[in-house]
Length: 318
View (cartoon, rainbow, N blue to C red):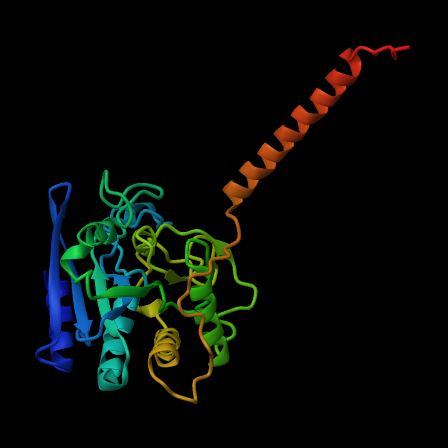
């Protein structure tokens, strides 16, 4: 595939012997391919950086009717995260001897074809590639000698007016740490103190489901006048910001330095091992709990009323 060949060529520019693994799978008769690059394979503790590289086959949200069956360029929704991973690999490769961890740079196929107004590809679901990868993950590491510490997903990180949300499936202690690092680097508008909060179906969920602390750096893409090009033909290079890419990359780079290089100049003491999760309850769960509490309250009131009207008076014994 042209995209994976491009990734391989960029990593081979860093090191001609850069280790990579192609993960082939099939979705509804369509051949797909994830690609994994490994840095510092001799280290037993693994940090995963992930992104998807596929773009949507149909611009299902495009405001112009005749554009809805055209492909989405995917400059932000796909390519931006891929670009940041390549640049991170260049920077962290130079620090590899100082790092106390192994790093995976993981590019997912088949993330973006599920249904919104329509399907990208009929009958496909979201995040097919990451689910396939996790189902085969034992093929990519030695569980007897290696273990995963965290997974950080980058999705739509390069658009103009970058502002990350508090993604609710994410492990809160890990996401909080990334926000704290971003803010201490001076990126206070991109990592706001009171961000939007919601749960996003994304590639990190498959890793959460097998117990790996995971965080999704993602924007409000559904109701955002600052970046209104999600799943339209306008998700193109014109609406990409070099500053947004730089901010994302430097924040994740600093995360590695804080946790995996012994340096007294670290800006922030992290939350390792990111086993605390205090996410706000999702709206649907909160509504359900309120309904249950109200229902139980009604039952209790009815019971008390019923008892008071039917209970017989017992005469005292003489």
